[in-house]
Image (cartoon, rainbow over all chains, first blue to last red; front, side):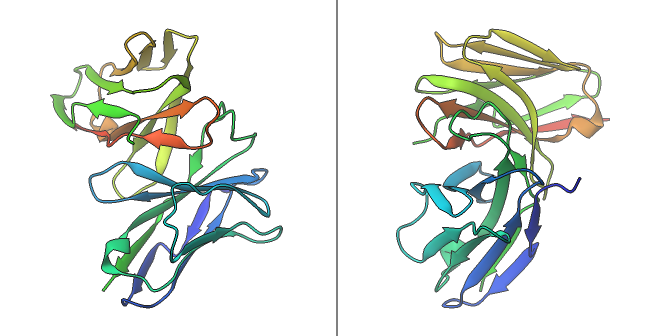
Length: 117
Length: 111
């Protein structure tokens, strides 16, 4: 039973390019969450999605960032026109039950480390 | 605003000793969870304690929750070098979808 899979593991982009981060949740999980982590810091919530729906994007910057979780395929976090400040580790997590109760734990992937040069 | 705040920020102990980490939060919660993160990896769920629970055990882990003080503690007994990691508390508030993480406690267990 594969865990949460994120790819790529490392991504290097030049300023102004686009970054696409992929997340395949655990089998049977239909809720996906994206978090961002700077070195030596905790995780900052970005967005919570169900299949084909964005439930809560209150943690995501209004510009350049977007997320989707299509009916088929992985969830995608997309960052357009990347800047150096976007360099961070981006973690995806999934859960089975309705995330609004949060009584089920999150299962995390190993993250994508984005470096903007 | 940051919800869970762990202290200490860093803790270094000898193998066999107990490690205690604390977490404080600001608003009413549904539950509080502790996670562990090894360097370069994702977070791994350790234990969940609901707002109506006061103490919970799992193996060498003991978690307490004091909702009147808005605080929780994680105790790791008889620590091992393999316990070296960062530990995060995460709070889940009522009527809110996101789980808020603190900055973590970096635990080093020396063999």
